[in-house]
Amino acid sequence: MPTRPLSRLLEEFESVRARERGEMARLLHDDTGGKLTAAGIELTLLRMDAPPEWASRLDALEQALEAAFASVRGASLLTAPDLAERISLADALARMAEAAGRRFDGTLTLSIDTGYRPEPPAARALFRIAELLTVYFTGEAGATVLDLTLFSGPELTLHANVEIQRRDAARALPILLARYQAAQTNLRFLFGNPSPGSTIFTISS
Image (cartoon, helix red, strand yellow):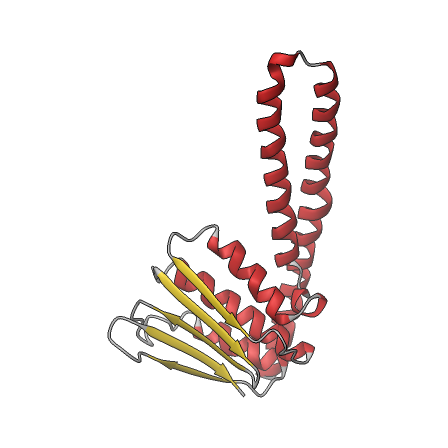
């Protein structure tokens, strides 16, 4: 039975993933966001009739709703499949890092050339790879320090303070390479341990 070319399979994979992310973004924005907005309206109406002694508790509830709405709005934006096209790559990475930092007990730093604006295919690939590596290092890999740099070229480098061997990263590498192929970019992938106890990933042209 003839097999489809790898590039076609990767394109289909990216297409399905984009649809799934788009549906999730819609649900977050329209459904969850709508319900939080409705709750805020009900809270405003309740405040009109509430006795003065409820003021502090209602203020706390309003702050909680605002925080929840901000989280949903941020998650909706990050989940959108075309984030790196709707805003600059630098802004997209900054928002991704901000969201990751809220779940990360360690130190996450960014150094980004804000003037670098790659074409959409490269922007999508760079963003999704950076997102995947950030999730990997701040979660499964157990890093406590993560440095992400982006300069024109492109050159995207992620340096973590944990030593990861190639065999340990094998689960992530095929997905990373798929991102390049599906985006039809000429990016290349470098992996290394520049010093004991650390790992560096570099994506460049």
